[in-house]
Image 1 (cartoon, rainbow, N blue to C red):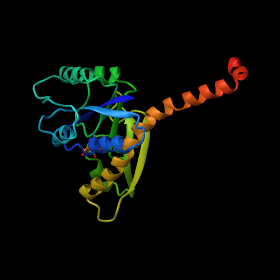
Image 2 (image 1 turned 135 degrees about the horizontal axis):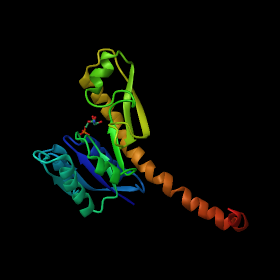
Image 3 (image 1 turned 45 degrees about the horizontal axis):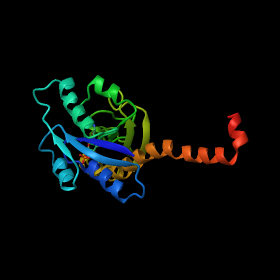
Length: 210
Ligand code: GAR
């Protein structure tokens, strides 16, 4: 089972979605073992603590990027974290961190990437007069919001939408998308193997030739 560390900066509603989905899902292939924030006052930390999850809050202020990430990373290792999920983590990660967690670090972004990377996404969607937006889960790489896309959900823009109303509707889709995509990451590698093994048992001669 994957041991997930979730990094947040504030509210933590995506963290909560990941947590509740993991408890509801039959045979959920991941478990949240740590929620860490770059702000000790992040409301999501209190929520995670009340849910019985280990938490860690430390301000990044006055620390260099690599030094701060080393503190977070030490905490991830202390809790045996195998994979990291960024959930409203509003801080760039250092290149070393990104490299060490390559393929094991997920992010959710409130647009249909590659459109509208970075900040002020909903303002940009409305300013461009787009009729469709959504959210994306991707692997974290050195390029901001630029890693391989793992899953997307589309959300229609409504006439009269404000950045706030659009963000709130996309958030609902985020809460559905993120747990599913993360769970599927682990299922897609772990499920075919038993099936292949069963096939090898059933067809020993064919398996020998493989
Ligand atoms: C979410 O909409 C997430 O997609 C976005 O911040 C919000 C965090 O809400 N993330 C980014 O913009 C990352 N650049 P939450 O704290 O309630 O999960």
